[in-house]
Length: 129
Image 1 (cartoon, rainbow, N blue to C red):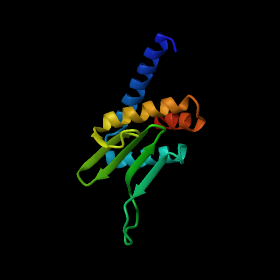
Image 2 (image 1 turned 45 degrees about the vertical axis):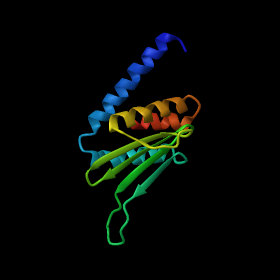
Image 3 (image 1 turned 180 degrees about the vertical axis):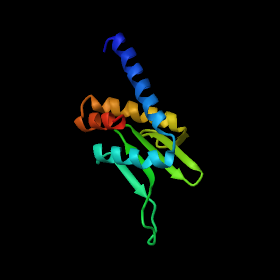
């Protein structure tokens, strides 16, 4: 890939990040939308866990896990806020990271997979739609 394309890809990533972060005014509203978009576009790579409870009318999204070829990304909505984690497959240890870093890792993984996968390309487009 020519160097000029690398700069364009970085700018594109920054635009996508800015768009997503602008949408995150209320994480409790954004989180289930993100989960739905990812699960629809990448059903084999995304696991969505919902809160349990027999007497609950709805079962809100509690945790999103995205597995790529070499990385696992988790985002969990807790009573105190959002907790994000990342691990490389070969390391196996989950490290806590902030939401912006988690989103950036997610977008990088999707962009890398989108080069050879129509579903990953659709997931990337769905995030900014």
